[in-house]
Image 1 (tube, helix red, strand yellow):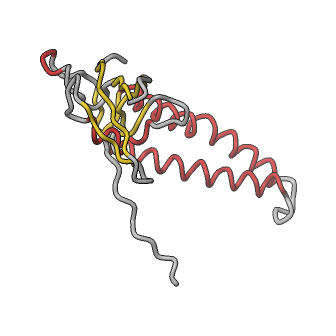
Image 2 (cartoon, one colour):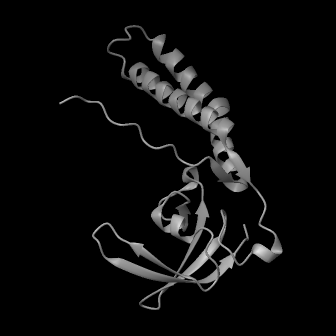
Length: 169
């Protein structure tokens, strides 16, 4: 059996202004601060002599490769991004679009609040959901008071009612 895998589907290229700023700040930090620090430490480790058994040198080179990989990824990704930095017109603010905070009420009467953002802004522990996720795809273009049914991977269904839609940062 070969190692070939089908390519992953391309993720959406939309991002909020805050998400773009965060990724751009990370790129600047890696390029202007972190990489020069690591380069200097590698230079100092290389001056110590034998590089084949020099742990600081080997680890520093590994860190440089990881930084360079992330810098390449961020540079390429940020070029293709479309920044969505404004809310929809006032007459359309009762409809779910990208960047909306959506409050959902489930069958047990518990409330959850999510913001629909781009896939690059997802962070574990936050209330952000990717616009490519099944729940967000169900919610997009729905209106206040609509009910949606999310089918879980185990085959069960969960019903949600949209109780609030906000377009605040």
